[in-house]
Structure formats: C-alpha cells, structure tokens
Length: 378
Image 1 (cartoon, rainbow, N blue to C red):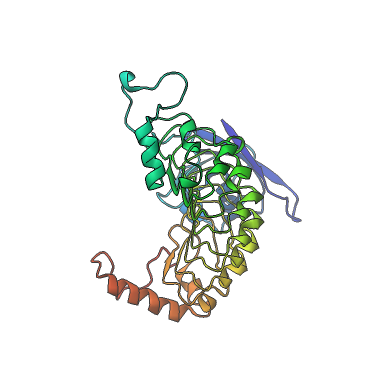
Image 2: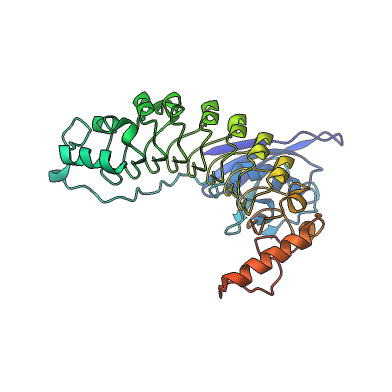
C-alpha cells in the first residue's frame, strides 16, 4: 500500500527528491526539496501517518536524522528509503494510520438463535409493555439486538420523554421520529446509523430535546438542521467519521456539553463561540491544527479537552476571557509549557486548576506539581 505527499519546491536550486518512508507495514512516497529540513519532512508525514512531528524518529542508513539537518546534508537522494518509528501516544486523531483498520468489537452479548426475533427485523412488543411505555414516558430498548425501530414506538407519540435505543444494530431513523415531539432524551449511540439513513428533518420537530447521543455510528456530516434543536443541552457524537461541525451550531445557545472526540474534524466554525452556555467541550482525537479565536467567548467554559491533535497554539484570549476554565487537557499536542506561560491570564488559570485538584483529594494528583495537563516541557 502506498500513500503520497508533495512539498512545494523552494526557490533555492529547485531540485527535489522522492523518498520512500516505511511505516507500519506500508510505504509512503514523499517528494520534498533537497534544501528542506528533516523537521519539514516530519510535517509532511504528519497528515499521512497521524504521528505528531515530535513523536517521529526517522532513521536512514542506521542513523537517526536530526531535525535541523537538510535532506541534502543528510545524503538523502532520489529513491532513498527512510524508516519511521513512532513514539507511543504522540499522535493525532484515532492514532497512527495502520495498514489495516482495526474495528472495535461491538459491546453486546451474542444472541441465542432461539431468542432472535423473526425476519421482519423488529421485536414484538406486548400490550402491557406498550402501556408501560406510555405511563412512564420511558422507552428502554437498549441491548435488544434490534435492526430496526419497532413500529410500536411511534404509537407512544407525545407520551415518550426518553427513547433509549443504544447498543443495537439500527441503521435507519425514519421521519416518523417527528411524532415523538415531547421527547427530551434520545439515545442512539452504538448503532449503524449513516448520513443517508437518519431523518434530520424528523428530528427537527423534537423541540424539547435536551440530550442527543449518536456516538459510535457511521456519520460523516452533521447537517444545518442540527441548529433547529434549540433546546439541546448535551450533544454526543464521538467515534464517528465527522469532518466538520456546521455553522448553524450557533443556534444551540443552551448547549452545555459538546463531545465530538475521535472523529476526523480538521477545522471548527467560528460560530462555536456563540454557544454561550457551553461548560464542557471535548475535541480530543481529531485532526485539528488550530482553534478559532472565538473560543475565548465561551465565558462559562470549565473543561476543554483537546488532546491528540496537531495543535501548536491556543486562542490568545482563552485564559483571559474563560475565567471559569479549570480543566485543560493538552496531552499529545505540540503546545509547550513555555508557550502557555506567555498567554495573558495563565497565572489565574493555573491557580484555579491547582485549587480544583486540591479539593478533589485525589491521590493521583500532585497538587503542588507544575502544570501537567499534557503540555510538553521542552
């Protein structure tokens, strides 16, 4: 398997070299100017391997290549073969891009053939269960080996407050979901829902919805219709294949928790700063190289998780304006402790962080230690 990248030729001698980089059982072809440095080569390899530059060790002819050396000085010519070794943990997104993708086993018990429903792909709901759903407002169908949402669910209509369909094999969320207009919590995590199989137009009718969980599915986009769910307080869409967040997220002004970790998001909309109620944001394990300055407008933000991204800096006003921020997870990014100390408001943030850890009385936390939220010290 071969991957490839090309660097823009510099204005020097104009010569470039083709390099074959061996990593994780595959060959990565890279074209770079002769006068570019080893550090430049590592930057080219980052999006192709998900390994951060400081986690890369490049070996050529049995020697580790120094960052400041040029390719020419390192005697790397056309057709050169370089080996890449990655430090454990120093990666962005879901981890190093390997030859074969590994799938996470679905966490549910294996059904006995005797207990499977017939080939109509739905469960038979007896009358007493339907009556109980209407009486309690809670439709609990998690871990039921469902391949489709039972028709009886739609019979609950405005009686339903909670619909839990997590840990099944559901592929389709039809427009009939609009009839559950009083639903406050909709849990669809760990299913097989894709972009084309979910009716966002139907979901838009759930004006009382406060919690929406679609984690561990097959989504690649979130549509503009997401902005119609103006009562949302929690949005969980982790472990999908999302590449972006829609600008319409600005309309979710009551949103308090946003969890979009383990996706493929490379850029965030500036409108995220208009979600003024946000207290916790988890952006870890994505492909982010920068954060919008508008994050500094989230004055209620208490926890920000951005580990395993290719970030080199933070919004300049983050510490100054987010005066409730006390948890910042920077593990496995390119942000250093020296850089953090240059931001206005750092000292006040560090004091809040220390105070919080002391109150937790957690023996795993050394309250008098220096900042240890993942910032590199060199």
